[in-house]
Amino acid sequence: MELKGKVHKFEDDINTDYIISGRYKFKTLDMEELAQHIFEDIDPDFSKKMAPGDFIVAGNNFGCGSSREQAVLALKHAKVGAIIAKSFARIFFRNGINAGLILVEADTDLISHNDTLRIDLAGGKIFNETKNETIQIKPLPDFLLRIIKEGGVINYLKKYRDFQI
Image (cartoon, rainbow, N blue to C red):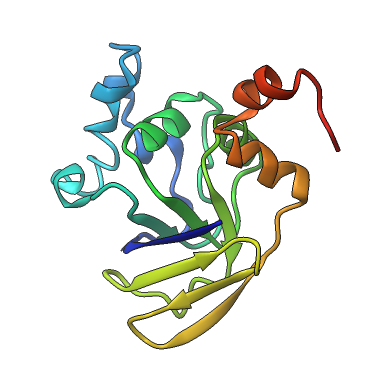
């Protein structure tokens, strides 16, 4: 699986309320509507800058805070290509994989806002095309890659009716 996109860079400790503000996540279950408001408290025009397939890049502890799935689902419905971070909050990571969101752990210090990246999940590398640099990623186990490939755990179970680890 290979992905290409532009970078939108954030810092450490991006919590789920920064991803989708509480003023929206309790008013609607329409994920398409929520997707229009991602990162609005950090950058009110973010959804206008984001293109389908673009990458969110951050530091440590991405997705900390509440365990509500709206943050993950809003990102998926915004068509984020992948989220690359030094580390993820554990519940966010599991919710992300379950929803089929591509989450990549890597050193993000060499990645800048607006860089163009190519991610080779199978090869375990990020190619920063803007800076002509290669960054190693923490590989995901095969069973998690299979869940992501199917679009999440529900789609995986519908297709295979069991976990094939």
